[in-house]
Length: 173
Image 1 (cartoon, one colour):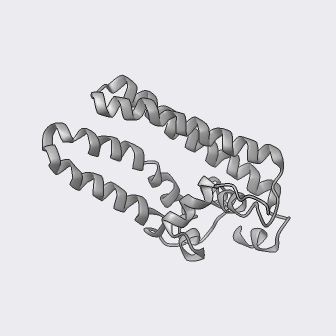
Image 2 (cartoon, one colour):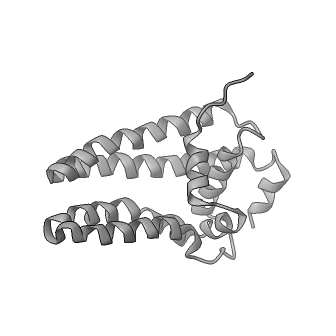
């Protein structure tokens, strides 16, 4: 019996409850770019414990709600012929890699950039705990920078894969 590996990317998609309608709306550039606000907002929300004490849980909960709602907050775009939309399409292609294989170099880059972002969690969390602006900013740079680079690689993946499956080509309009 083959052992199934844990797929962090697929688990994240399931947690976010991403269906076709949510993905179509998330292809809106406003959704993609405003999503980059999540980590800075969470940083501010956690840091606000200095001013609000336990009341900081409210801004943390609001950021978590924004994280879930963001892919659904904007209408599906009239045109998907842009960098941000292609990035979301690449993410969908990557998540579908068990059904339609992606070139190995794309998978390696995606996983490597996920590690870059993941490594950023350590200095970010330490910075938030110790109220250290330097560590917090270093973590944010790694996490947000890794995510933006990941999205850029997903654009490349989509461009390489859009002709490999009938659904993929129809996303671009």
